[in-house]
Length: 189
Image (tube, rainbow, N blue to C red; front, side, top):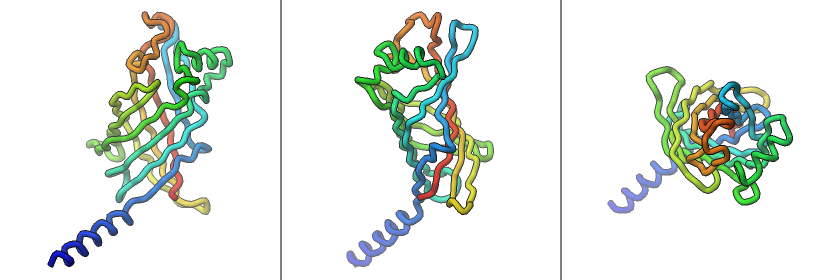
């Protein structure tokens, strides 16, 4: 009887592992963007150009999805070289000491609206890890000669001071709230 129970448990574990689908972010069809207030009168936008990301799905849509991202912070780009160099300095990201930022999901929940989810996870910047929640709009999947793709948009707002990005502590010139807008396309592995 014990052997039969072990066999049944192994079958369920095997079936469960086959139901999971692995995806890798396609950086040619994705973008990691941010917006921050400048002098209280305008918005500066930027993006990160070097990142990797993995997604594991279990079944349809994003139910039980698991996200894992790493961003090379030195790839920050606001289209102004002097500003980008300042962002890489110890005043902001201190890329020599903290070369990566990361996000690891902890859970995802469908909302009442179709194709919309709340993605919970841990965001780490400068070795500070905080809980964040992204609003996710699931775009669906598409198949082509290049394989199967999955698309989505995710948004959240963080307080930069929570991550020890303390330049301009009064936030008079550089705002404290950073909007993160991520457009993602994943390729099925």
